[in-house]
Length: 221
Image (cartoon, rainbow, N blue to C red; front, side):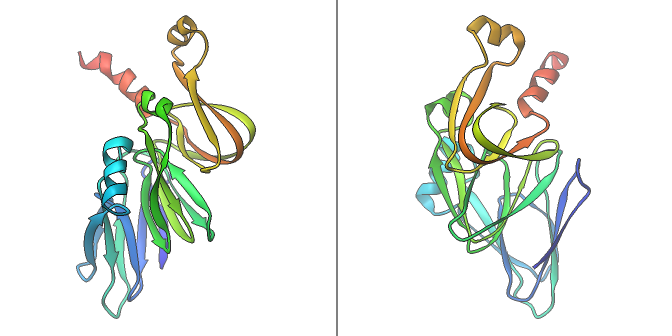
């Protein structure tokens, strides 16, 4: 498979060239356009029970689409995301995993397995669901964000605003708490933060959907 991410960083779009026999699995609704020779099927995301967990307790889509090129010539598939921002790709090795916040996953290829990981009740209180989407390699994974994407390695403790975390290594521990005292958290505008502990990688987005909603709400009244 050949691919290229164009229009970065604000309007990133994935252009995929599927060779004969190749297939790619995507989040429902990710397809922007495709050649007429490409076939696609729809299935539950990771199976019926994991799909129900992701949909009702994790905020993810219930379905995924699998696109396949059954012809003898290469054909093009174009993928995008619902938010304005960048798209990143990650190559997972055998046994390596990554967890995504709701809405970050776009597509994967190879022997990647989709599942769920318990996120805890504090994650639910932060509006991010009880379960996170977890993908395990080997294979190629695409994910997106609202704004730019930055990668950071955690070695110890790191405090992150809950609205800026996109993806993280599953061995990292999350502890969502108030940014300070109750009064200080409210008056500072910081609210809830995520204390991340352990060793692993995280991916952050430069903008927050929650911040955008707070900015727009007074103007719509």
